[in-house]
Length: 151
Image (tube, rainbow, N blue to C red; front, side, top):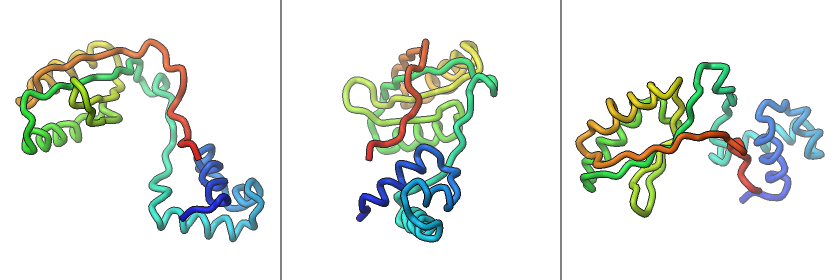
């Protein structure tokens, strides 16, 4: 179980994962050693799963963000496993979800340009034997970045 102080720590770390124990402790009114112990416990319990840097896509040559819906032709465990293996080979796919409704999968992708998005869809996704249909929506403007989870 996590207590209110753990929630404060988690909120602080979601805002800045690079907080030192001293800064974290000061933010949540704990000593640095108490803050460090609590952080280590939250990591050991699997509540904190990773620390990542957020990059500016434009600065690294990625100008097109899109959401791609994939409808499967084959609804079998083998087809799903094969499609998952394909996704693992595609660095452009940064998130993937299974869905209810008409589409079976929703992919969030980042590409250098429209040509790269076209190649991803026509050369990699559509030729897969389990895929029946692909529909993409290009992001015009991202109004909100991936936010911290509500605590």
